Amino acid sequence: MSQKEFWNSKFSQEEFLYGKKPNTFLASKIKLLKKESELLCLGEGEGRNAIFFAKRGFKVSAFDASDIGLAKLDKKAQEEKLDIKTVCLDLNEWKSDKKYDVIVASYLHMYKDERIKLFEKIEDSLNPNAYFIGEFFSKKQLNFKSGGPKDEDLLYNVDDFNKNFLYCDKEVSEQEVILDEGKGHQGDASVIRVIIQKL
Ligand SMILES: C[S@@+](CC[C@H](N)C(=O)[O-])C[C@H]1O[C@@H](n2cnc3c(N)ncnc32)[C@H](O)[C@@H]1O
Image 1 (spheres, rainbow, N blue to C red):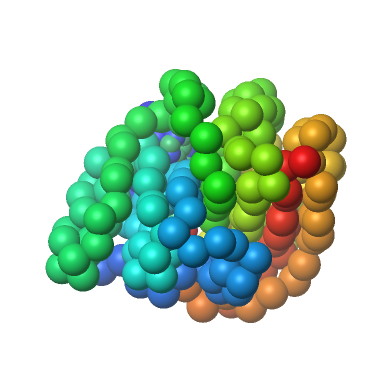
Image 2 (cartoon, rainbow, N blue to C red):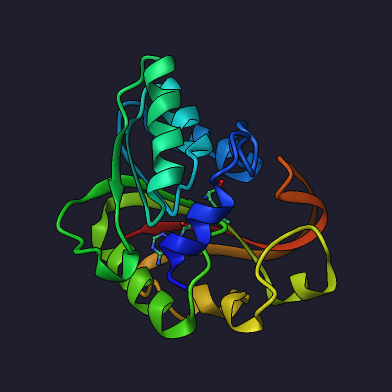
């Protein structure tokens, strides 16, 4: 099953699987970011982070493999009178030909060979001093029942980030947190949080 088929079936309910509030870690880092800057949300699904940042004056684009997730984002953006550019694509096919001031991702899980290429494209797409901020499940998440992939190869560790993003400052930590994000993420969880700044 492709990512598109898998995530379309998850997002085909009317409710928002991960709720409508942004990921709390991404939202808490807004103070690092310059308003009105170009912000890209990767693997953005139904759009909770995109809506949050667009409401606060960022110029937001959102990429995802699921057209059903992005249709929910487009509808919400229209209701809120926000201008958000959505692009339905598999990130393995993404050609990074534009630069951004901020790139964010929450719970975008890809296999090792795919994510190494994705991380290179993210680094290439950041302007000098721009940030990549993300939250992902760690391999320890297999011990919890609060959501996320059950396949260890899709889960991350701190080294996945520290061994990439060579020309960046990196703050990468593994943390135990309590998630309250819609039906999809509820309860104790182990996550990797990253704040990466291009030099
Ligand atoms: C767990 S959901 C998280 C959605 C959103 N970031 C959030 O936190 O609400 C994972 C998202 O990553 C997207 N995704 C996974 N692999 C992808 C790929 N190869 N290309 C594009 N999107 C992908 C899925 O379509 C899905 O929307």
